[in-house]
Amino acid sequence: MKITKYVIILVLASSLVACGSDPTKEIRQEIGLNLSAAESSLSSLNNQLDAGTLRNASLLPAYARVAREKKPEFGQIIDVLASEGTQRGPTYQSIVQRLDQVKPKAQGKIETVEAGSAINLELLNIRTAVSNYDAMLVDALNMLADFTDGTLPKVREIEFEDSKAEGGAIGSEYVGNSNYGQWKTGSNGSSFWQWYGQYAFFSMMFGNRPVYYDSWSSQRRPSYYHDRNRGAYSSPRGRANQSDALAKTKKSYTARGKSFKSPYAKNTKIKGQPNSTKSSRISSNKPFKSSYAKTSSRSNSSSSSKTYKSGYNSRSSGSRRSSFGGK
Image 1 (cartoon, rainbow, N blue to C red):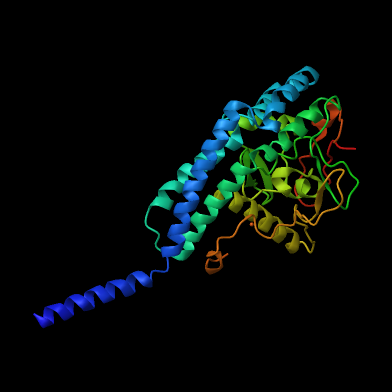
Image 2 (image 1 turned 180 degrees about the horizontal axis):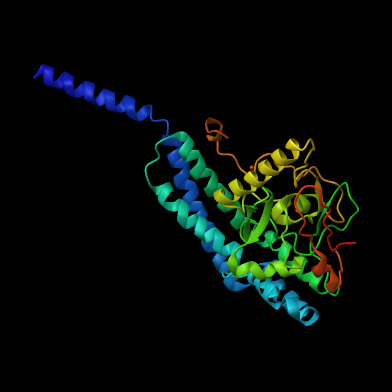
């Protein structure tokens, strides 16, 4: 009897020690809270989109209407940009898809803290994307404003602090946006932008020519997506694709004895406001770090129609100088 009692005590003690030493316990609790918060935030965003209470979303139909009158030939692109203020938009659909993909992992067994941190980070990114959704729409509004040739004003325009240039061709804001396409490697080893099939018509803004990573990098326009919340609005796969294109381009330049600047090497500010410390120089495409992330392996131009036809040239990457439509 005494022996049995001692055995039971030892088993219970061992169980308590095992539970107390579970390294994934806290990260699992954090994942649960962030999953619930992400779902709640998405539900709230749905209600606001339905009610029409998001300022920038409510402006999109009016901007799109004027843009169609000015540039009817870009009707498909204008329609996609206008849809960003609805549940049909590419960015919204991407957020929903990302949440659907991470949810089973969040509710499943977490084997390691590292794996848990990756799941938690994606949930934090999704929450950030949802909470800043209306601000993200400035890219769509500003591109539509460009189509109106100055008839409609830009909204909270982001510009480079160290340059007075207006930037590159209209549409360069959406090159590199993982909700619209991905970087691919060509036969010459250079990275070029491939629009997803349903958005292939965006290439008409660049004369239906390839947009190479290095040309885009040096002459791109500043944007909310790229310079404020790229990490939050890119899926893990999208962030990996961006990092891979940067690494390949740097390696290619180094092999030729040249240096290459990241497309995010310039600081940005909100136009009309004093210079801020907010920088587009993002060492990681991730806006948040879980408290457990340390354990993981650890990211205005009123151009005429000829602007859209010039875009980038299609010469091989590296030595070319591609022309944008900006002034």
